[in-house]
Image (cartoon, rainbow, N blue to C red):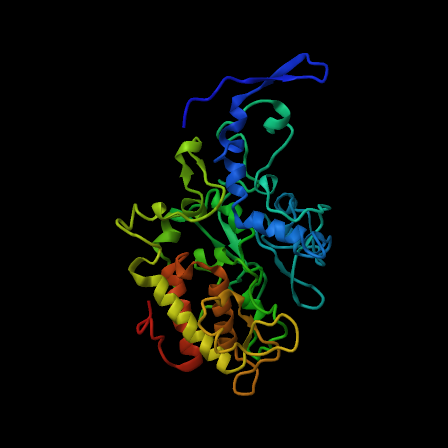
Amino acid sequence: MGAGGEAGTLASLDGSITGSIPVSCLSPCHGFNGVVAQFQTSVHYTEYLVNVSSATPETAWTETGEPCGNCHAIDGLQQRVTGNVGTTDDGGVVNLASGELQYRDPVTGAQLSASYLGTATVAEVYCTTCHAVTNANDPHKTGIPWTPGSFPLQIDEDGGAINIERSPSTAAVTGTQASGPAGGNFGPGSTCMWCHRSRVDVTNLLTTTGNPITSVYWGPHEGPQADLFTGKGGYQYAGQTYGEATHEQKLSCVDCHMVPIADNSNVPDHSFNPQLSACLGCHAGATSFDINGFETDVQSAMTQIETWFNGQGLLTRATVAPYAPLTTAELGDGNWAEDLPLPGGTIDGGLLTQNQAGALYNYILVARGGAFGIHNPKYIGEILYDSYAALSSLPLTAFPMRP
């Protein structure tokens, strides 16, 4: 990359010169390899394009009074940070200030999710979704070039631990506090975790009296990476202990998904694509993310669990009735995140026990969490092992011993 050119001049309609365009506008945001160009290759941007081109653009994800806007509306995080969410309970969400969304209706006892009360009509994770941009720090309005720290995040990166939705017991809907490296917070990664969560308190979802599969939306929401990364959000079996991988002890989301770009002022990569270079400090010589074959093992385990559930008629890929189990071609095709719980499904003709339903929940959680176990290898290996043992009383082929 060559040296920057001189600033150009800005002329008014009558030809008089009224100001200059600073070259600094190009870096780090508007250059060919800048933040904006990176963002336009991200899944966040792709989802936005899919949404605006749909038959009912925006409205489904930004409707006031529904929960979706808490994460999907362009101002969802801003509304949550200021406490502007709706509940049927005056007490509201117990740990709203640390990311929790679930609460218990005081009349019916039902587990509910806080609703979005903003008025945005745009469903996009955008600059202003994650960053607290104001008239005072917006360079488009101030004319002052960006400097490190001048675009603070909506979620204070020094704001302490966050709460994953899974509560310690059924006594209350409080979530579980998760802490980052060395017992601290997750830094900038806390912003990611406020949305990348199951949005379901599995402790209060499952009962000991039988668990019907009520719809294809039963179980964790898409993108529950925080539940897995923190090692707190899965269904955990009584009598078992669950550990943490080194990833959760030393890293945060941004360490792998937002590696600094050297030729863009070392500003973090806003494509959010994980980079193998982030692994090499600990895994020298790694040539893929399948380090020690763990990704392969998790994929094998997922297919084995998928096959068991499908044999019971508990999985489908149909989003509307009539529902049908997976076909032979769909089994083990690697698209585990597309598997849905089949409404009305049973095990041996009966409702799922708590442990069986917990296994289905864990399967969906890992499938939708993506990355084949990398987010927390030890924890993910343990919940998969325990889940299959609860279903079949046998170990997984890929994990003959509990990780």
